[in-house]
Image 1 (cartoon, rainbow, N blue to C red):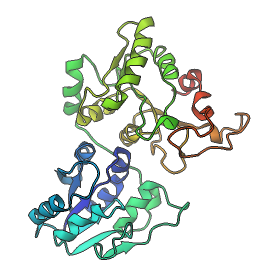
Image 2: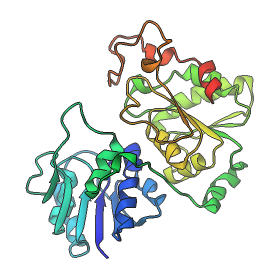
Image 3: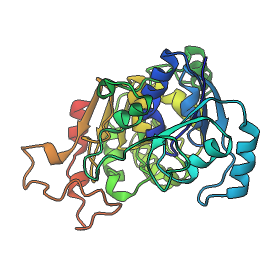
Length: 333
């Protein structure tokens, strides 16, 4: 059995989209250990093909040469192969310093000596969907058909739901955040108007950065329907958030990491896109509906500016999100 180390991406959505790669590696007999930063490690704990998850102890930003070299020294002799998912220089240092014989990844950022099996970087503007991008590291064909899948045991879901008085499929999850910026976030007022009309209770999920907008939504909803909406942003671990999404009746979100988590569980969902494009990072879920005004022929005038991939709307109107109404979301939810 080949022991393989996978260096994980640092974004939740990207971590989800590496699952088909890991499934391919496990199917051909590789024993997989994933090295991941703390905020994505729980995603890998929901992948049964992963034998071990190593939580990397490094702070955000900076190469941290000495810390990485020391960490790599402790891994020497443990792995025969490494797959480096991110394109950065620092992500390739640990496999190199650990002396792992076979080191696979994209050419990336100045990594010619660090990787000895390099895939060429796709040309700018023609990068494949992210699942195929990561699955290609396996060296196998047919990667375009891959779809991520996560699993959490029913008793683990129940352990998170029971203390909150919830039953599986008895609530909605709403994730109004998007780490990238405002041009990916449906307005808080729209979220509140939609959530207030849902029959089952609503849980708001997100990071501590989303607490303010989630408070705004919860207060607006509960002013008309007391105790209907609960703000859990920053109040759950990612392991708990993953279990809550897995147990939800349905989910509504922006284009975000939690959107991809819901997709990988096959949870019915509505995914709202603004400045980004579902052609590149869609929720790969047959139970998903994507709302994106760019490809809606009935929407006039057309959104020639989309997708702009900006953090803030450069034109100042954010029509791509403001003009998706709560009624529209409810009609497909």
